[in-house]
Image (cartoon, rainbow, N blue to C red; front, side, top):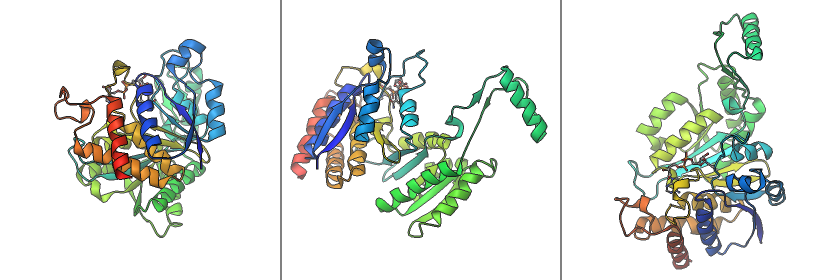
Length: 362
Ligand code: NAD
């Protein structure tokens, strides 16, 4: 079956790592018709918009996309194309697997964690009250009347909404992911001891949903304790699900356990639309140098192949990436002990080395 997939190269190093990623995905033999449309800062310079309608139309038509990083232009009134797309397509789940690959420099070995972050609510909902604004003063007065709580008059306020609907969606996503991917356990992360009506609600819904999945173990952890546990005993954890802000922090912590941004893939997934992308940004200083590491985007491609049901191609691509990193010969500079090692290869040569691995594994 031929898949129709939206391809957004992005800005900075985006086009280079996209080219490398398309090459290795196609080498697996999967049939894909790419619909290439761009968004971001470079498009903004030509067209005055960071997110043209053709990108939205393409995503709505194809339902699946993969993108390179996008530079957030300063002062366009757009916070970020990524945030806009998450909102527009209700991509409520952010999936970030963090896995050790032999040959990647890291303090830890054998890490295999999956972070599932809620993507639409919490302190990221964008409901904010600026210091000294009349509406902020009204809110402070209202809170004083209703809750007999003092908020200093020189405060700014950010609202933290957490709903039953949003929590059910994300927790079900985590358990379904665990079931589909033969994972053993889901840990719910929260701060319910302090924020009883938001994180407390998250925990209550987590427990209700967990009871519907007797085949998967479940447990919960308070977020601060979880950070320490992940650093001390990461092997105890498997799939972790959490509200938006904790997800932002824990996914960077988990990426740090496996060697950092160069190998951190991601997916933003909704009910019927999904967009895969590396966690890192557009690294503008390396643009056009054929130097950077495309692995995070290639691994995002692995997630995408799994998501569209192409498990064999996903496994082949992941095995080829792992084998090439383990060999450690044809790898980009950041995999080398010494970053100036002259034997490091460029982005496209790295992709070719993975194609060669795919062909030898087939
Ligand atoms: P960045 O991730 O681009 O760079 C951080 C550091 O990591 C830099 O030293 C960079 O050179 C290095 N790096 C990043 N990716 C690499 C790779 N594949 N191989 C080797 N080294 C790599 O973060 P930043 O500098 O904070 O942001 C630059 C731009 O990217 C900003 O405009 C930001 O808004 C944007 N951004 C976009 C996304 C996205 O599209 N999802 C995510 C984060 C940042």
